[in-house]
Image 1: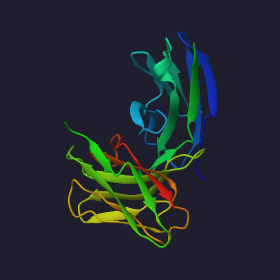
Image 2 (image 1 turned 90 degrees about the horizontal axis):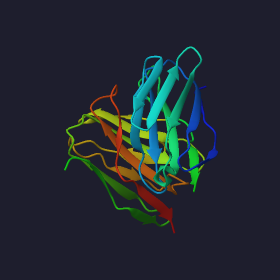
Image 3 (image 1 turned 30 degrees about the vertical axis):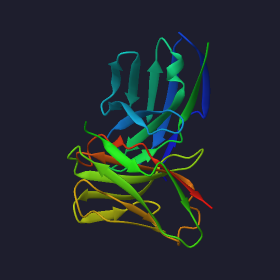
Image 4 (image 1 turned 45 degrees about the horizontal axis):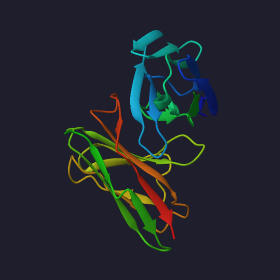
Length: 109
Length: 112
């Protein structure tokens, strides 16, 4: 079966750096997405990786290793507004998105 | 402003009742999707459409129906056959199945 694994919850301190990991086992691979979702709201697109390596976008970076079935989202200079759930999703061989359950990130002052 | 709208924000369903959730987009996207989100689970695909007048079942289509009569609109009906409809329903659209999906604000469905 297809599976996306992420930690359920993480806690970090304002101003610090946090890394959220995602491992996947899917039928084929056509890209990996990270979305941010604040409680009760819709997911918003953060990043997309299809080749190995690091993609940097401001305070957020996303890394992919296709051979290891592994990605991480790196958040720097954490702000209170970064408290949210972070969803990892992989596009499989049928171009369908397979979603992880999300990682709830709690930022403490 | 371009975007995706969903209505209503909250919807209450009585036993045996069908209810319809609205999804409209003005992004000129060809592809539209309906997902269901339950606590502690990943998003699950209900139905998707790549083109007007055509749609396909996702992983959990039983108890749901859709139509795609216009490019901009993709309404979802939750029928009485769906025995556990309480969830957060999200509509998304994208330029195609190989493109990024963008989400509407969601509809929370509750059963009375």
